[in-house]
Image (cartoon, rainbow, N blue to C red; front, side, top):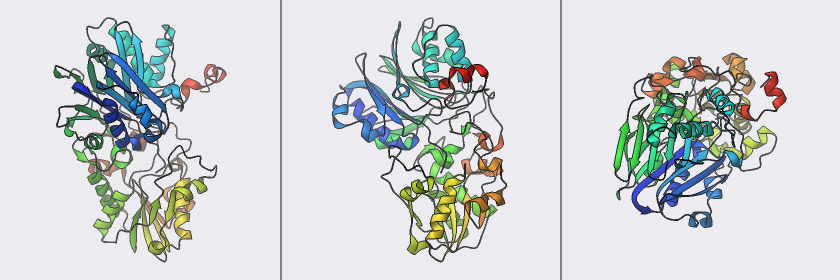
Length: 474
């Protein structure tokens, strides 16, 4: 529950002018869970780009007037952001737009480059001037540089992929093409589909395809470049199969919507399996099972089905509090505003409480306290992921071990700190069973990184004071 969201990317292309901005608006709404800092849409109308980007939620940024300002277009690319590199600012809103000698380009990116710092340093030494602190601009610079000599924008992207390391699912729009690409490890999801009237839709998750009436066609394969134009679709596979597939397992645990299917695996089914595994490995006598909304609910249902213990709605989430809400400084007050216990359901009961993760432990402690105050007799917490022990360099907002409670305390100690009667985590060796595949990245749990480990991992590493950067403290 305490781990932050990923970004969401979305794009459309048709052989005739359509309400491209309206489709993107609906697609971004379906991907809002992946990022709530900022959002943006860029529409292509016969080679001209029209854009609107700002901080805030999709419904706040895109008013009726903002959407009406877009002309009909044959293509569009969109983005909703939670930043794991770079601060929250208008400059970091995506899609990033570039004007260069070979034409225009708009780029949306989900993921995190593990070699962003060294790539950016080399570009700056070569005279590049950066306007954002996002690693997405680094990708745009490299593609633009390669485009000067490459015969096409897709060839430039392919050449750029030779130097990019880490996680990136991209949608790139030129005046005539919509191009999507997934890194060779396939850390982050990406798929495409078609509407009944022939509009091609690309999105981070299949749930966003369904939101605009598109039928899922398939996932973009790790390393694949797909080029959509008015003359059809072309797949380039020169980067496919060069590296082991490593889809981030946290997509199944937390990031994705439960109604999405990622690489052939239902997210809902994965979370049900997590609950089943938790019962198998950490059974406990109890009166009811409840989940922490929203990403703990499916695992709680899975635990209930496996155990035979009744599933109950014990916590209610205030759906109207988003990241734009000015929250109190005290974390307990924020939890009380966001969640409420159903006293009639939990009073006097022995409860199995299911959540997706524990990072610092403070939020878990407040939820346990909330249930105690509502009269719960016993609270046995079960977590549908293993303990976080290592930083993530691929998009999950854990850039160091400093605040990870599992790095400083044993499981019994964590249980005592959060006030639970018992605590059980999903065993790390069960992650492949949860995901339905061993082709996953679980480095934040086991420390087995698929790429080189970067030397500088701070989220705001490109925004540190010069004195800190020069002294090596940042």
